[in-house]
Image 1 (spheres, rainbow, N blue to C red):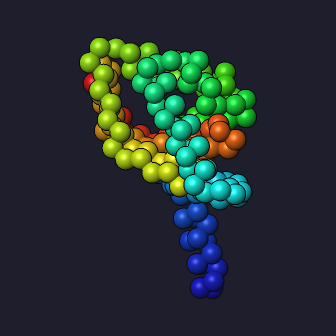
Image 2: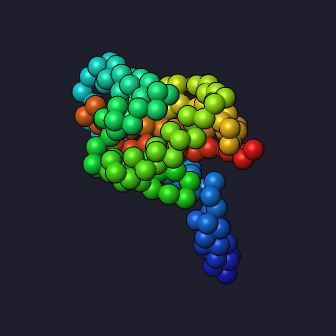
Image 3: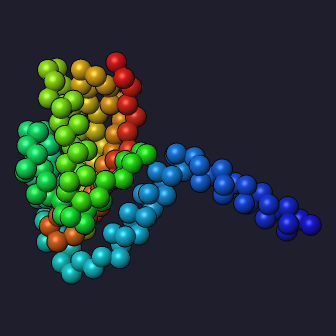
Length: 162
């Protein structure tokens, strides 16, 4: 009976975790970590430099709100995962950034990169920002670079509307 009770509790906990947004984000990060660990990187130093160069280009394009330069870092197979949405391919990713660029173009915007880590073909950043519409109290992105482009990107944020 104890095994059955334990099994029932386990399934209930699994179901509860499946509908918990925080648990979903943890699973997304685990999937990204697994995907990035399965990608072979022959020269770690070269991979880190290339990965960092791709990210640096992306950050400049984002802060300049330059859509065409921003999209150069993605492919038709790229996937961006944010809370409650997934964007696949350049056109869907363009839609995501169009909204962000509009918001971040308003007067008074501030952005601060608070952490950046590069390991092999993975970039992790955390940042804060404030726009005319929102306060981004905490945000983090994880990027997986394959062939000099973002194959995967996840974004987690705590945003408070003004």
